[in-house]
Every structure is written in C-alpha cells, then in structure tokens.
Length: 555
Length: 63
Image (cartoon, rainbow over all chains, first blue to last red):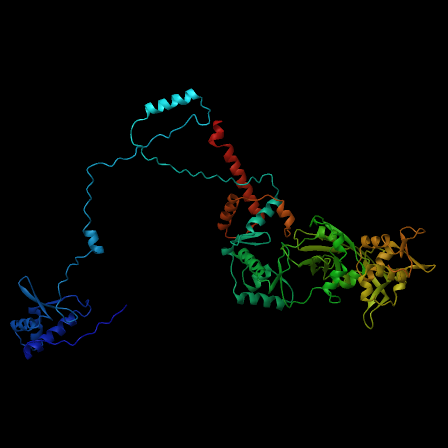
C-alpha cells in the first residue's frame, strides 16, 4: 500500500529575529540535502553557515545562530565534531532522532546473533550397531525332532540377554532393464507400420506421408498465409504442388536451407485444414487442391455417375492390391473411355499406379506425359469408394488429338510415383468410317470418315462395316444403361446377326458394342452371358466364342 | 507409398518404450524432416549395437 505523507506547516520558536534566522538556516540545509532521504541527517558546520550568511549580507554572529538553532530543538540538533559545532536537521525539517535498535527478533539480527551451540548430553546416545543379516539356511528344509530340540538349545545358550536393537530394513528397488526390440528379423514394411502405429498417435510428432518431425519444429502459417495459398491456387485454376506453393507464395527458393522444412510445413499444416484444402497428390508430387477449382476432365457426365458405371470393378479388384509392381500396362480404348477421356482403375492399373497416400484420400492428381506429342496432361485418379469404382479422367485432349476408339495405348511408370508416360503405336495414316457421338442436334450415333495414325485392335475398332446397326441410334435411356444385362440385350439387337428372331454376335464384337454405352469388362460380360438364369443369353453352338440372344425373355 | 490398412497393423511387430524413446530423441535432434526409411535404419542400427554390446559384455566374456 502506498501512503502519502502529509507535510505539516513548520512553526519556529524564539524571538522574531531568531525565527527569521532559523527559517533561513533550515532552507539552506534543506537545499543542500534535497536529494537525500527524508530522514537522513543533513549536517553543516556553524562556521560555514555564518560565512555564507555574511556573504549574503546577514551579519549574525555564530553565537546568535547557534542560539536560534537551540531555540528550535524539534527542528535542529547541534553536534560537536572535533570541537566544531554542526547544525543538523533532515529534509522533513525535524531534528534527526537516534535510531533505536530493534530488540525483537529480526532477519539481520539472526545473522549477527547466532544461537549458542547446544551442549551435548553427558550420556552418549546408544546407536544401533549394524548387524549382519541373519540367513536362515534351514528354511524350506524339514527338521527332525532332535535337530529342532538341539537348535532350540543352541539358540537359548548363544542368545545374550541384551535388548534387541531395532532392525532397519533396507528397501531395494529393482528396475528391469528394457532392451530395444530386436528388429533384425523384421522387414521394412512391418517396421514402417509399427512406426506409424506408435509415433503416428503421438501428438508431439508431426507426420505427413513418409516424413516425420517434432510438431514444435514445424513452421506455422497465419490465416493470411493460408488465404494467399488458396487465392494462388484459384488464380492458377488447378491443383498445385507443395514445391510451387513454397516457391511462388511463400518465396522460399529450392536451394534455401529451410526449403524442405517449409515444404513439410505446408503439407502438415494444410492437412489439418480439412475445410479449405484437400490433398490430391502422391509421395513424389504432393498436389494440393482447394474449393472452387474447375474439374479436371470431362463435364459430360458427373463424377459420381462415372464411378457408378465402374462399380463392377469393385468385384474384380484384388483384396490387397500390389501397387506399383508392374512396369507398364497395355490398354485398348473403348468408345465410352474415348468420349469421356477416361481409363479404368482396374486390377492392372492398380498394379501400375499407386494407392491413396494418406488415409481417406479421395483422388490423386497425376501427370501423364506423351513423348510423341511433347505434351504433359494433368489427370485425376479417382480412388474407389465402397460403392463406386475407380477411374482416371482428364485424357480427353490426348485421345481426340491422337487416337480413335479401339486404339492400343501403353502406360509406363517412372521413378516418380505421380508421373507416367503414355504412348500409342505410330502407324501410317489410314481412313475409315468410324463411330462418333453427334452432339450438334439430338444426341445420336453416326459414322464419319476419320483419318488416324495409331495402332488399333481391329476387333475393337468401331467401323461402319462391322457396327452399322449403331448408325443413327440414340444413346440408351439412363434406366436401361443402369443394368448391364439390359445393355447387353440392347447391343445384341443393334449389332447382332438376326437369325430366326434371335440375335447372334461374337464375344469380342459384343464387348466393343456394349462399351459404347457403358464400361464393361470382358469378365463381367462373360459372366452375364454364361450365368443367365432367364435363358435370354446362350452360347451359339455354330460359331466359336459366339452367343445368341432371344428377345422377349427379360434378362 | 500408400496408406496403411488396419489388418496389416495388427499383424506387425510392436515397438517398446525404449525404441520410442530412442526415436523421439532422434526426432528432437533433427532440424529437417526425417523419412520413415531413415527411422527404420536408425532402429536397425540401435538393435545391432545393443546385440553386439551384449555379446561382448563382461559376463559373457567371463563365461
């Protein structure tokens, strides 16, 4: 608590002349000690005061000055030092009082007046002597009667008649040494899972993909930084890698010592911003996406609908896909894949491509490079969900510029798990009437003269001479498309050879025709034709690998 | 590199407190992100060092 001292008006005693002189002296002394403590004594010799007053024109004698001071004992004190009188006062205008020693206990007194040493008692306190632990060697052994008696006698004879000293029991705590786990027999895959299992659940450790760091060391970004990252992606209108974001938005150059750290910071921090950012990358190319970016690939059909079309792949994919175990995959393009710019994420593609990098990842942006056209395409791999198949989209331009339905392409993997090379077989240019979807008026299939210079699977090539029945046909209604069996039946009617009100078609021709409307694998088509309970489909005994369809029997 | 599934986690080796403490110490001293492979290599080195230390311990030397 701070208390303000009230300064009281000073009343000086003595004659009028003495009061006047005492006032002057007090003013002089207070001026001299203006920076001293309030109760600190201010000393000035009487001779010095007399000289000063004389120089000021006051001719008062030293004796009169002393009498003026003596008339005010509350204000001044007179001290004699070496036979010279000194007038003493304080800044408060009171005579300095002698500080009385504090008699009660104080902290300072404690140091100067230590307690006297306690005298030891005349009789030394007996200490219990350490005794050797008694080991009973007979514990656990069966004692006969004689031995027991003898032992009792011996004990009685030996035991001295002294008071038992209290036994001190020593507590020994034994800690078990924890050995590190022997991991010499464990393969890297299992160790990685064990690491992820233990460290991944620790909030002190930051993890993204295959990288780890203490959470406290990961750079943090402000809301403004995150907004700039999002705005930059929206400005570029496509997902961007963490490399691009680190360099272009945060301004950290690849050679900088903290580049890797900031890059990891982007990945780790953005992965915690689920509402604004989505990871769509791979281990080598860590792409990030945000809301409001244009869709990669076709807009002809919704992604959910395409996923539903590829649902049959869920039944055909292995339980534990061995990702990136194949070097390359050859694939023949179907009409459905061509017009939508797609590839199926089937068992073969899963063995070539990668799986989700982070749990719950829905899609991955990949780059497909075509060395023949010196073009790299940004494509999106949509991972399978419990009720939708996986597929790759974004190859529309590559297809329309270089290929036709029925073309054979080869996709090869590279060291980079997000970058692939796609090639077609270059051939001499040839022309043919090929199937197209006319979108100018009503949707309708038409045959148009087409020149192409790529290798094709002739069985899958949708030429007018083999698939003339599709000319001017409208795409099937969505209700019919939804069921593979009804699509097979409709395809028989469109392209099959009519025989006695039945339709017959070779399997490969049927496969190409069915894939005009919806994706269907050879496995699925074969199972529909072979396992039909209604009797609508049956094997044609006259032609090898051919089937017939009997209209009117609901498949 | 792909996300782990729950089935493989249950059938793998588990790390004890000594291993975790060793890895945490490693991460505390790291100024750059450490890869899973680097952590695995460190675990293997630690395991080998412990084994070689055990084989040359005074007890084993006396026997």
